Length: 222
Image (cartoon, rainbow, N blue to C red; front, side):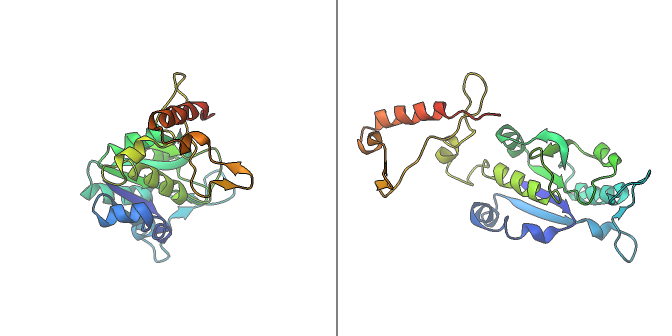
């Protein structure tokens, strides 16, 4: 799978997407990440990508013509890419959306900054996604979160059985996400709190029942 990231700050992705599981996935050829610098498409010597808003107001707005050129540059070599804008107005990202994206071969994430995008940018997108109802400095951190959550679902990135037992991979009859069952390791007792006896019993059938019971008891509350 390939992610293209259109951003003003491509270096922000060097650390988070080059380490740990995601870094290994890239090294093994399971994941490709391509960053595109928005300023490369500016025509003036100052590489201007934003301007004051019509009608007045504070802040600067990212120019639609510059972003359009950046998107088209990606499409020229990735014609089937799904263009997704990072914006608070988008549908909320969750595990279902991560699964949906993991079935795509090519995704382009457009990261905003400053006061946001010229409204006409949305006509160029296939989807708009938010990671929650709060404000961040830009779309780079949401893009990192989406790539991380999606990449973990790709075949070969992590052990399949581990992914199946994770939080948010199952739902109850009401459609609520379920969280992973509690986990324990050594020491056996810490500050008066002991590991549940059932986990020490060696009875794997009963352990599975306990885990299933605790899985269903920990409903995700929206």
